[in-house]
Every structure is written in C-alpha cells, then in structure tokens.
Length: 478
Image 1 (tube, one colour):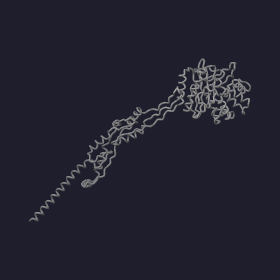
Image 2 (cartoon, helix red, strand yellow; image 1 turned 30 degrees about the vertical axis):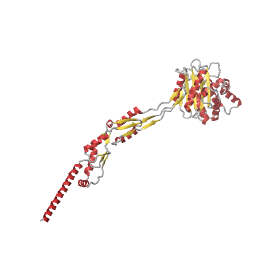
Image 3 (cartoon, rainbow, N blue to C red; image 1 turned 90 degrees about the vertical axis):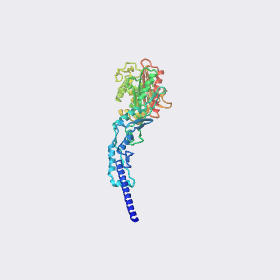
Image 4 (tube, one colour; image 1 turned 45 degrees about the horizontal axis):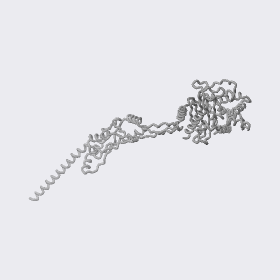
C-alpha cells in the first residue's frame, strides 16, 4: 500500500516538474518571440548601439545624434553647422531594413536555443546611410571664407625712410579640403567637430609699381611741381618700371654715351693715346670740346656729318627718339627733326632742338652696354656684329664708372658702391642721370629725368634724384 502510494506520488511529481518545465519553456519562448520583434542584440547602427531596441526607438536615437550641430573651428573662431542647413537626411528606413535582414536571417530555433542557454551572440554592424547637399555646404564655406579670410597686406612705402616694407602674409579657407573634413564629422554620432583647413597666403612682395608710387609720392611731398620720368630695369630678371618713359628731353651731356658707343663701333683697334685722352675727356671731364672732336671723327672731319651719322646709327638700334641735329655749343640753327616723342601733345619739355633723347632710349643704351660687357650679348653686337666687341663695351662701362660726381644717382647708394653713369643739366629746366648700379642683391639700370617749366634749381632737385636713387637701391637690397 505504501509502495503504491509512493509510486503514484513520484509520478505526479514528475508530471508536475514536466509541466513546470514546459511552462517555463513556453514563457521563455514567448519572451524570446517578443524580444525577436526588436533589433538583434549587439546591433550597431551608424555607430550607435541599438540592440534590443524597437525600430522606432533606434530611428529616434539616430535622428537625435545626427541632427546635432557640427562644430567648425576656423583658427580661433567656433562656428556651428546645423545639418538642416545642408539638407542632411538619414535613410533610417534603409538602415532598419538591413538590420531586419540580420534578425530574420538567423534560424528561429537555433537563435532560441542560443538565447535559452545565454550564449553570446555576435553583433551586427549596419553602416550609416546619409546624404546631404554638397552645394549648400560649399556655399556656407564660401560665405565663411568671405567673413574670416585675411588677405595679405600690400607692401607699405615709407616716404620718410625711402623703405618699402614687405606686406603682411594672410590666410584663406581651403574649401575643398574643409568639405572633406566636415564630411567626416557629419558621419559620426558624437564628438562632431571639424577643424577647417586654413591655407597660408604668402605676403605680397614689393613690386616695381610700388617703387614707382613711392617715387611719385616722394617728389610730390617734396614740393616738386614739374615732370618726373623714370626707368628702372632689373638686369637679372628683366622686371621693369617705366614712368613717363617716352617723353622727349634735351640730350645734354647724356648724349656723350651714344657718341662713345659710336666711337668704339668705328674703331678697328684699341684707341691710341691721343684718342684715349679725347675719350676720357668726353666722359670723365664731360668736355663738350672733346665730344665735338669725336663727332668730327665720326663725320670724317665734319662735326655736322658726325651728328647725322650718329643719329642714323641710333635709328638702326631702334631708338627713334634719340638724335643729334648738330654738335655741342653750335650756334647755327639746326635742321628740325620730328620724333614720336617730340610730337606728343600731352607732354612738352621744350627739348633742345640740337639733341634729344628719352628715358626709355637711354635705358636701352645702358642695358645694351651692360649686356655686351657682361657676356658679349645684347642689342649692340646684335645690330653691329663685328663692329663692337665685349672688350669695347667693358671699356665704355669702365669709363662711365669714373664719372665720379658724388651726387645724383651716386649720392643715393652706399659708399663704395659701383655706379657707371652719365648725367646732364640743361638750361636750368632739365636734370637727368642714366646709370648702371652694381649692387649686392642684383645689378640694375636707373634713368631719372626731372623737368620743370622755368628755372630748376640744382640745389633743390639734385637731392631729389639722389633720394630716388636711394629708394631704388633699398628696393633691390632690402
């Protein structure tokens, strides 16, 4: 009796345990079924953990994260970029659909068994699906550049010191590079910051135009109410400044430069002692008598013909505004010679009818001498092949170096500097100097003319030329 009762009790207990187990299993199954309607455990969507969240919850979480502004840093400025400004759109439907494939792709019973035994489940990574308007972003960045870019400052000319300071460097937003950086920040859910790419902009170096403006401002401030003409040529780079270069001026003693060039062109051998004396007197002493002797040689005994021959050779060099209608100190009326320069109506310096030139023509002659003396090239041997040599050009330049007057161009360069030049002063209304300056940072040609109607005082105007020379030297050697 007792044994049978015990057996029955055990059976009922077994049944009860089975029912409890089945009930627990059913409860687990129901719970698993409910959980399975959420996103799979371990799911990472667009960088955010969304496992076990309902799709609606996951979508809301993503929208909150990716609608947050992006901090844009422009040097020390902090700007906020609202994603709505660039029409940013999250494709949550596409991301949830991909997550759904991970959930439904696994075998139900296999997944239930893993869940029942609490086995770790490998997570799923759903990549970000996002787009926005690059055009709108570019517009915003261009506006930012307009507001915050710093343009390089132009060089500043100081009339008091005759110096031209370098301009200040600037900086500018690199729009294309910054768009890449911002794109990266838009695609992360946190730490949404982007350091914009700022490119340095080199400072603006002083230009010949800056130099020209300084010279004009200087003579104006000095009270000079006449005409300034100026040509500067960088003999290394070819860069040039020209202020009123094609104005006709009296030739003055500066015409002794073309006389000397034509004299050496005519010589077939090195000059003899008597010829050297005349040549040196023409340049070093600026003797009109010696210059006329050279003209006589150029004209086979006639000074007037020598002047005509010289004019013809200047035409061969392309110098249409340089001529000698007569010789120095001539009293007889000269033939009238028209040139493009002396036919201008906008400028009239009432140039000497006997001999005229322009700053541009004198610059051509000085440049030609330098190039010929330096390497045997340039316009002189090109136009007169075999008639003028490198050695002869060197001899002319060396003579011009001996024109030591300690004023005009010479007075504007440091002591000990080498200047090959020829100056002139005519009838009290014109002053000029044309030279080659040999400087540490580079050699250059400088031609300066000042003209004023009426009387031009040497004591007032010679320092103007010297200071213009000083600012040019400083420009090349600052």
